[in-house]
Amino acid sequence: EPEVTQTPSHQVTQMGQEVILRCVPISNHLYFYWYRQILGQKVEFLVSFYNNEISEKSEIFDDQFSVERPDGSNFTLKIRSTKLEDSAMYFCASTLDRGLTEAFFGQGTRLTVV
Amino acid sequence: GQQLNQSPQSMFIQEGEDVSMNCTSSSIFNTWLWYKQDPGEGPVLLIALYKAGELTSNGRLTAQFGITRKDSFLNISASIPSDVGIYFCAGLIQGAQKLVFGQGTRLTINP
Image (tube, rainbow over the protein chains, first blue to last red):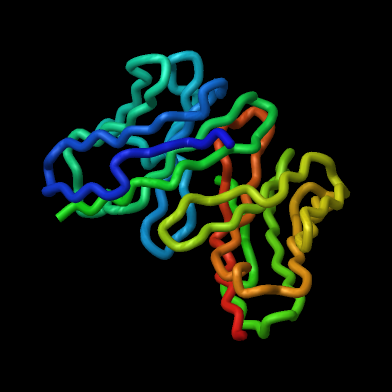
């Protein structure tokens, strides 16, 4: 069964450092997303991406965040200067169709900022 | 902004019991989804609901999309140990490209 894969599974970084979280969405999917989940809290939307541009973003997704689809398979989330409060699980998701919202989630990257 | 209120926050039940949890919102959603999350894993889709009033089953799971499009419930019948986890409802508003998640219901089962 096709799946969304994310790397690394766990990333530890020092405050102020840049991190790049990587995702390989399901191959024929067209819409891509990043969500985050602070420990013990609900899953929060960060950004959606379609046709090589951001479709929608939340207030969490400020200038420190950026997304990119550098090639035909990868979808990345970059945090330029990490803060302690960026520590969370980051989930990538993809969907085939805008109207069909059965988003498939990756297993997540646990980001720990120290 | 749109918010989903999910209840209960946690449940402690005996194996074999039935479970019911629900989500409500002041906003209308076009699609409701129910996910299960195991520790350290990403959410896994259980059931998707697309039409108001729709009742859908997936094995021991049954979910309904409320007539007003502002609520949904999920029932689990005859619970088993592997049902343990956190269950999230999520809604999609037409025209938006984001899922809004509820706070989750943590299910614990005593054998």
